[in-house]
Amino acid sequence: MGSKKIWIVGARDTCDIVVDQPTVSGEHCRLELVDDELFVEDLQSTNGTFVNGERIFRKKQIHRDALVTLGKSVTLPMPAQLTQPSPPSPSPRPAPPPIPPPTPEEAPFPAKLLIVSGIGVTVLLLLILFIIMAYGGGAN
Image 1 (spheres, helix red, strand yellow):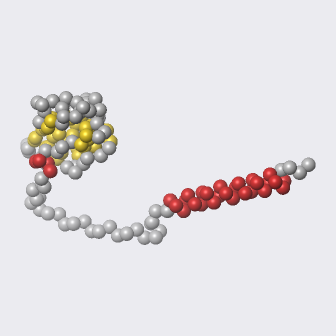
Image 2 (cartoon, one colour):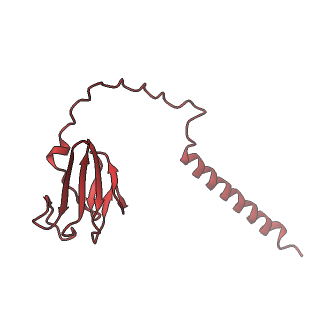
Image 3 (cartoon, one colour):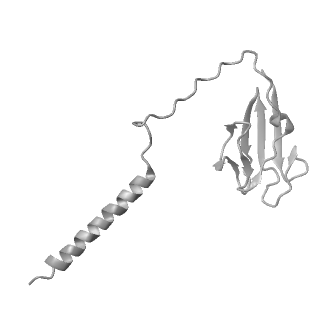
């Protein structure tokens, strides 16, 4: 079995990582490093634990660069061991080939064109309605 390291994060001074903020629970979340894979788990905190803006409800594997917040606004300070670069892997993988830019037929439909055409159709329909009301709707 490989290596495993656990940090308890919270406002209590008995936590491994102490975050003294009013929105942070006593034992807010747990960070776990298992064989170079990082996990975060909320410990039923009052304000929740968020990964990249999404609240988590069970143990979740995360990337070392993920934005983890305690509640919606308090950024989790990562342990120094996690912010240092990982040791190089024994067999480096070749870089993936670059992704070519989209061809014109693959390019996404421009949103401005959709909005302008929608406005144009609306104006045209209103003009037709006005002509019908002015010339055809009132003749007796």
